[in-house]
Structures are given as C-alpha cells and as structure tokens.
View 1 (cartoon, rainbow, N blue to C red):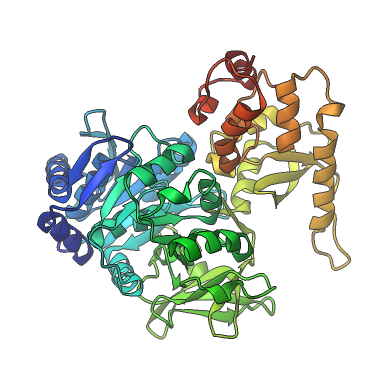
View 2: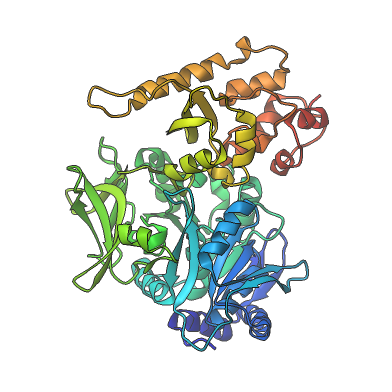
Length: 563
C-alpha cells in the first residue's frame, strides 16, 4: 500500500463519503465512492499478483473501470502512462522504448485488466514518487515523457482548493478531455480530491459529440465545467442557457483565451446566470496549472488584446524574465509543482529546467507582459511551438517526421492557418514527391491533431529585408492555392463535394479515395459538420458525428446518406 499523501487523501474520501457518486454516460451506470473503492481494490490485487513493472501503460477511455485502474496503479505505488487507443503504432513504440521499464495493460469488455506485455525488471521495494508520465510533442520529431510526482499533484490541488474555495458537497464535475491530455487529471481527480460528484463520458460518447455532451451536462446537473477555449466556443452552440441552472463555474485552461471572443458569452452567462469564469495558465511540465485568475468585468474594459492569466497559484511562483535573444519577456515557473524533467532524456531536460538557489525552474518559451495591476498578460510562443485545439505542438516534430518519411524534400516551413497546419516544401534536385503516400505514412507516425491540412511546393523560402522568413508572403501563397482549388476551377464534382471545398477551403483531389478524417478538417469543424449537412442537403436518413468515421471514403458516405 502506497504511503503517498495525494493518493491517501483520495482513498480516504472514497472510503468515508457515500453520498458522492461517479456516473458514466447518458442513462449509464452509477457508482458511489465506496463502490469505486471496491473496484480499485480488486484491480490493485490483480496488479500485485501480476508483478507489474513500475511504469504501467494504459489505453484509456472515460469509464469508471479506467478510473479505478489509475487509482489501483497509484495504490500500488506505480506510475501510470496514458495512451489514446488511436495513437499511431510507431509513436507507441517510441514511447515504450523511452520508458525502458514498463508493463502494458488494457481493460477488456468485462472491465478486467489484461496484461499485454512486460519489459524490464519487476518493481523493487524502492519508493516511487512519479504519479504519471504524459508524452508531449518534441522538437526532435519524437515525443518527450514528462514526469509528474505525487508531491507535484498534492501541492497543486491543495493550493487550488484554497483559491477556488470549493465547499458544496453537491458540486458535479465532468471529464471532457482525453486522458493523455493533462487537463483531464485536473477535472477527474479534482472531483475526487475535493469530494464532489463526477460525470464520465463512458464508452458510447466521444469527446467531439457535443450534442450528447450538452445533454449530459443538463441531465446530470453539472456545476463545474473545465474546457479549452476552442472546445468551449463550440460547446456553447449546443448548450441551452435555460437548462444550466446548476452550472456555477467555468474554468479555462490548455490554450490561450481570447477575452474579446469571450465578452458576449461572459455577459450572458455571468451577468444573467451568475456563473463564475476563471482563466488558468499551465503546461504539462509544471503540473497542469501555474496561474489563477478570476475573470471580472474590468478584463473587458480595454481595446488591447488581453489574455489575462493572473498571478501564480502560489503568488510568486510565476514571473517574467527577459530572454537572452530579444527584448521579450518569457514566462518562468518555479517551485513545488515543477516536474523533475523528461524521462530518460537529460539533454532536453537540461534545456528547459534549471535549479537555482534551491528552486526548480521551468522556462516555458511562452511570452508575456505585466499588466498595470501586476497580473500577467499571455501573448504567445517565442519559438516553433504552437497551440492547436488545446494541444501544444512542436512544429519541428512534424518537420522531422516528414523528413523521416521521404528523401525527396530538401527544406520545409510550416505555418498555422485558421487552426490548421500548412506545409511549404522545397524538393531536392531531380526528385519527385508522392504526396498521397506521404500523407498516408504520416498517419502512421503522427496523432491526427498534428497532421497538416495543406502542402504547397515552393522553390525557395521567401525572406524579409531583415533576413527572416516572410510569413506574410507564405500566407498569400496559401490563400492563392485555396482560391485555385475552388469548385469553379474543378471538374466532375458533385454538389456536396463542391460545397465541402467551398465551405472549408479544402485541398482535396479524389473523394473516392479519401475519408473525412483525411481532408484536413479540425476536430471542431468535424463536430459542426453534421448539423450543416442536415440543414443544407436532403438526406436519405439521419446522420450523426460518428458516421463521419465509419466510411472508407467521402463518396461512400454520399451514396449512403445523400439523396
């Protein structure tokens, strides 16, 4: 049994509070805290009897069985490593090799643990303080495994409990993020740590099915909602404010919040329904959240571009430091929530983490500025990392994977355009590129959210008079490519295909050989696509979001659903 303060508090809550519950999906199973603890103990016995290695890879879904598995791993004083079931095999293999020592498990249809494989020596009696390892995008083309300790979690949750002052035993949280995204750690274990109810999506609701999620929020009277801004501004199209009598708290994290976009929603939700809004800045490497800001009316009384992330959770743990390469100010996080670094990757750890005067520091690469009241305005990235739908992505990771996939390309530059990625490439002399083959191979090495939507051949990288890449010129080249791809300049397209290209500015050649996951739409665009189709075209039968993932080609989808 682990003598870990963070886990011990959660287990005490499960043992001593029978009025709180976990519920799965719409009309799904319901467990009180004590029943969840029984599930944990059963899985703990399996883990101990199978002599699992220290790092336990788990293929995760938002279910009570998965939750019980994580807690059982913690009870056995091991480290859990979440991997999405859709993660490409090559990326999974790299993660395994990075870990070195691991056991790989899955949860079968009966909810029981099945051991897939082991590597390395069994666990010894040595105390392990690493609670989880989450792999994030890396500049080398390979992901980096961030080690977060039980102590990191305890300091964070204890401090945020004081900041939010959670008191209602009837509060209900909901898990809306992938379990390989650390925001899910906060929304799942926040409910257990503060002794609140928790709603899980279960096996039958996907994180992009916002119509069902909205119904679940209403049915289960969710009071505390955690969202990335991108997801939230899609979700509100499905929420009926008249049905949100119980919602009292909305917490933003995971990516930059545009306050100008929030203004109208804030007026409707806060002033009319007294819902409180919070903006928390954080990165996987500093344990989910680093700053705290309660959004107030004054945040909207400026014409400047503001994304106020407030102050450090511990008041002085976040500050700005002038970078060595410009006059910009970099956000630096120090103290008890900073990770010890990346697993088996000292070179990358030493680049980003420092120990100074007995303080552990993380240099984020994010740029900020001080507001007149001393709070911090988050501006954006200083390097080649971008934020895309809540994920932090190293563009060099994508670049390196492209180079690893083909020897035809000499140089690459990648830009972000309308929440999509565009690749500008220069071919090596006398080389040709099979673009369709490249796209297919990238799907085997990169997660879907990192797959570029546009590929534009160029003869040289354009530069400004200062010798920097002329991104404005690249943007104009991309706009021209999109314009040249309009339906008016294409032949043999159906009305539906013309509509898709025009509506989403697609770069698509053959609808018989490409499916909806391959056409470069963002997850948010796929979420709303089914509603637009239903209102625009005459259908043979009703469609759902899931149908977009069931057909091998868009043409096959057309034949099945469109008149």
